[in-house]
Length: 383
Image 1: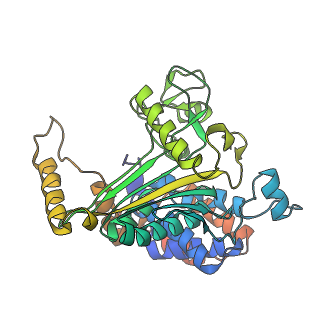
Image 2: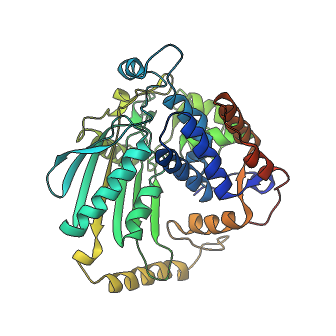
Image 3: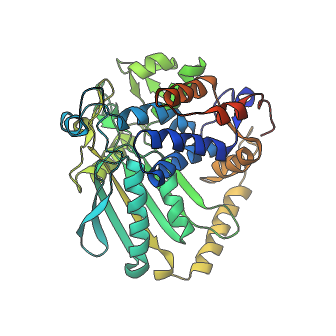
């Protein structure tokens, strides 16, 4: 997890207050209460773990996707593939069942609704079959992969999750945005140690991180982005107009392509530019994902596996540090500790995010006075 600059001086809001406020916004967009709460929980959870690129800064965009444009029916917007075409009442369902392999139709719901249903389904199926995989189509943006793989971890399983993404990268040596960063989440339970939770896109950073840096007026770390001509840049505005740099150069492009293919072509979703583009946005219902759950106990002794995981993580902790390194983290540990701190001190949100939440709520007649009151004066707390 890349730390965001300036969080130590930002306003803090309690996790529960933030989740409740965002749920009211989504309910006002026509989502059933349970779905609104789930969608809000996934975003607030990302902020809680310090992954603000996938947190409540997404609310204005999501609300726009859920609310049809003036004068257009939901059916018309779905056919046209324009902003506002997501089905707020979507109900995902299994449409193909091959035992351990499933295809799920997301019913054009928000991707969190479809993927949460899919992960719950494969966890339950894996209890009988040892492993289960679901390909999800007719879906939309689904947020952070960590949410789904942590569900598998909680069930003493190994979880995998991936999704397609709007093209933000070029093929290695190119300058056209035709490859998505297409993230992969992996969750592996441990014993006394925090679980191994990797949630990584195959660009050097999430585009949402570039948005946050641009909001705050901070330069990007070197190596994150390229300008529109494919040249390195640390200017977040030039990066937003240009390209994200792949992790590992051509290797990152290849992995992202493989995950994008698996996330889309097994369920009829839109690979690459078939999903849409950054200028016009995604076509509603063209996102695709996959999730997988592997029951550890079906293959080996669960208690021994967790002991071995603890030993692996401990070996990471005790390994020799390079000069200037205070501590070595295993995947997911920094986010885990951030969540503990933010539960205690509140979640930091910048003024632009708070203002966007207030404007989105006001446009839909939602009262956010509890959230804004909680944010007042809650700055400079210990992390």
